[in-house]
Structure formats: structure tokens, C-alpha cells
Amino acid sequence: MLKNQNYSKSALAKTAYFAPFIAFLLLLNCKLYGQEDIKRTLPPSNDTIYSWAEEIKCPEDREEIYKFVDVMPDFPGGMKELYKFISKEIIYPQVARDKNIMGTVVVQFVITKEGDVCNVKVLTSAHPILDAEAIRVIKSLPKWTPGKNKGKPVHCYYNLPVTFSLQ
Image 1: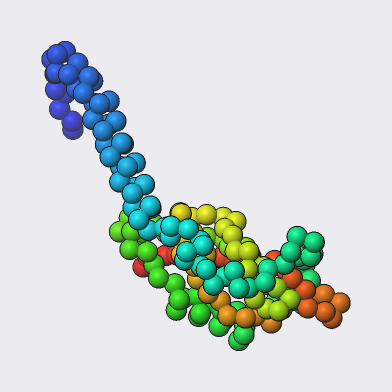
Image 2 (image 1 turned 45 degrees about the horizontal axis):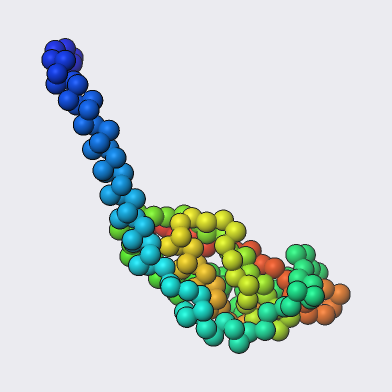
């Protein structure tokens, strides 16, 4: 059983006075520490890290990008090879490991009618650090077999979940 302890009113008042101040300092420290980790981990800008992506011709605004096609784009070797490629290329960020950050990032990208990957963006975020790594890996994918509509290659969207888990 718990003992019923009597505390003086002055001790309770001191605790009540300092508790919010200590909680505020802890919250401020955690917030600042977390933001610095993210700033150090994320790339400074997409232009400097992924400058090669500009070479890929992405569909212009006037070109239609299909959501549904007769034949979906295919990664060389199929889905099994796609996930093998992703698991080989992914580098779990150390900050995410240290903070036990896990989750699934759903990435959307366009497979051009030439089979290139472009217009990579996050649909469902797990954490900014994990999002950046998922985008990096997706941008490094090799050429695909493009999707087809009525027998002709077309630009189409592709959504892919990338799961980060620590075992």
C-alpha cells in the first residue's frame, strides 16, 4: 500500500511554482535539439544534391500524366527486384536510428514514356528525415518499362510505400 505523506503547503507551493518552468525548459531544449538534428540531416536543397535530375525530361504541363493505364509501368525484373534495389540502396539515417524513428513514407513519382523517374514527391510522410532518404532512393531508380495506354507508351503516376523499420 502507498503511504499517505503529509507535505507542507510551502513545499507544495514551491513545487507548483517551479514545475512549469522546468517543463518549459525541457520542452524548449527538446524542440531546439530536434530541429538542429533535422537541419543537419536534410540536404540543403534539391538543386545541389540532385542536379542530375534536371537532365531527365519530365512531362510538360500540356502533356497528360495518366493515373490509370492499360499496362502499368514495370521495374526491370518486377516488384521483387524493385524492393531488392530499394533495400540495397537505402541508408537508414543515423539520427533516425538514434531516436528510434520508424514509419512508412508513401512516395509518388512519374514514370515518363521513356521510362525515366521524375516529379518525385511525398504523399504520406513518416518524418522529414525518412522522407528525404526515400526521395533520394526513388530518384536513383534505373529506367522502367513505361506504362501503356491503347498500345502507346504514356507518362503515368506511380505510388510506392517505402517502409523504414528498426529490428
